[in-house]
Image: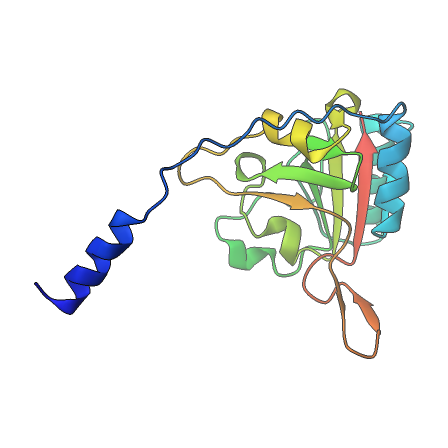
Length: 189
């Protein structure tokens, strides 16, 4: 028997039997999930737009396109001035992306985005500014509730987005937009 095999056999003889994960039942302790979501979203440099829904967002997109900004929209009912391109490389000059969010989390201001609604998975990271649209009834109190509502099939991509891109160095200089969008606006519908 080789040294490697004897070590593996010794490890097997002292291995602990697998144990099932304990159930985690964390009941939400938030009375106003939308208010708490807004507070925590502001903390991570995002902005919540509670009123107006898609009409307010379309008005903002119309204003931006009149200024010559390039806006791509993946949200039904909101029309930008650019279509989804064939390749992700053609997104390099997108100023604003409008994307649906699946679930918003009050405890940390994060929004789950799934690649089924992105067009290209790089869209929320390559655009200069990001608009996410979330249904008000999809704002949950905590990550435990959010995880129960989301899922990924094989080959899918999903990500929690919490505010615009941020990075800081040892001198405590915060840079917003270094690795992705420079602003994040959430529209509740």
